Picture 1 (cartoon, rainbow, N blue to C red):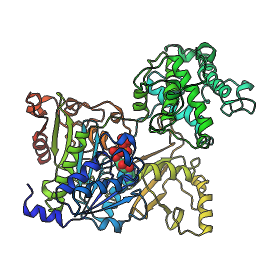
Picture 2 (cartoon, rainbow, N blue to C red):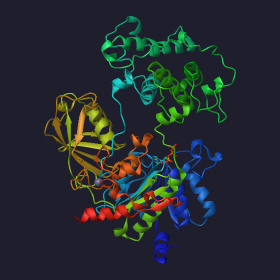
Picture 3 (tube, rainbow, N blue to C red):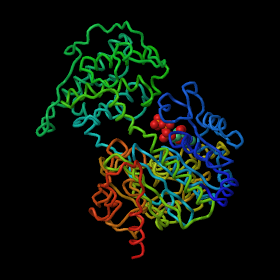
Picture 4 (cartoon, rainbow, N blue to C red):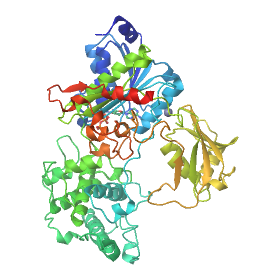
Length: 629
Ligand SMILES: Nc1ncnc2c1ncn2[C@@H]1O[C@H](COP(=O)(O)OP(=O)(O)OP(=O)(O)O)[C@@H](O)[C@H]1O
Ligand SMILES: [Zn+2]
């Protein structure tokens, strides 16, 4: 039961929830039932069928409608007297300015991506509004509190980069099914159905050293004299047959590897491809599986079935979705795209002697999906509300960041820890400059804007200055002359800009919407390792807090929090961390939650009682011990 004091803090508060998905639905319900009276929700999405299993405020009839609005209406049905305001919008839209954020007593995040989380973090810092951040993945969850100047901000700890694979593993020497998925999704699918002007490694390696005139034209363009079936067969023979033959001709590559087998259409009994079954699923999605009468997404298809799905999906794209061709990027919710990618990945896997997978498994890998657990979302939502109430009561000494871990016996375990102090070298909440190694004579301003300013620094509306000269700016109110100058600057190499950027230059970069600025010291470097530093530049200076050494306890930014709050990491793609992993300093970054061995594991861990949830204070006492040293 809440105390009178708590109730009055709750009643007089105005809270902003960002995200009305898995965590958001639970959170809105818990806020309403806890007595919150003025709740604002932002979510940019509409409801999908795949949300219904856990986003319990939504029903089938709501599919296609705004999540924020439907969530609001559903909760108002059982709490009609409270005020809920919904925004069907991206939190990065300019309407959600620093002034907008200042209206709230606390901001609660239920997001699913790094980009939006970073943006909200910056707005909360600029507005001086406390942020309660959260994330879940399967049985794992985490809630943390960020108070400007008192605790670390969401970006104080670097987040691991999403898992990437060396280009040659994907283009020439796959050894795992995931490599075949990446090839099918990022190369083949992108080449056939995506933007034709995008760089694509599909042919680069496989055609190395072979200048057969037959293959020097763009083989991926449909020829005027061929129909879509002939086109499909030619693509099939090219990517699964010819390209593999070319790869095989490089003897060196296969000295210590199993050789792949070229596969041509004529070798595979695909039978009659004219379909009788109609090509729609029950939910109205276009589907090659439906046309072919393949019903169970958990079945592993044979090579022949995969080949049929390949041809049928390709045909359906060209015949039924011609407008999409040239504009598509892979989307795990696009049934036909998932079918095509599954089939292509399996045919490639077959060629390389890698076990084939079902559509269900392939979709999970392609979409970086860890199946959500509704209970974890509910527990995390409860923890968010507990921390939000402490924020409202200004109970700043008692905040906890809480990890939701998986008990070895599949029970859920809560681990509270004290929040960390701000990282003095955080480029977001402190003024520490960053440094960038870059070839200033080769890299263009465009590379710097795309790869560093937007992608690494997460800026939306950047302004780049060298001394008092503006090199680049984004905004709606720029006059045409300025737009022309900035566009021309984008195409210039750094050292040839009107105000040349060379070794020793200090650039200031500002995002006017986020009210966030930082400085970058430029250091010229000639060469970069293509595989390890594919951006051709290296940003540094934003380090782990120096107070932590490798074997010390890490409350946030440790492997669990990174796995949860950063997208697409190895952990988020299916490998669940065990408590024992987290309790020992054996994680790759040495940042396991506890110091070493079993001594730090909660005693109750092996306890066999039947409770489904228990809270351990062990970690908290350890944290205190470490900090007082
Ligand atoms: N920039 C953003 N602005 C507003 N809402 C956002 C933004 N980024 C993500 N969201 C919302 O955050 C919510 C996250 O919820 P959740 O993790 O359950 O994802 P989902 O898309 O509903 O489910 P899944 O990804 O598993 O299909 C989504 O509803 C999504 O629309
Ligand atoms: Zn910070």
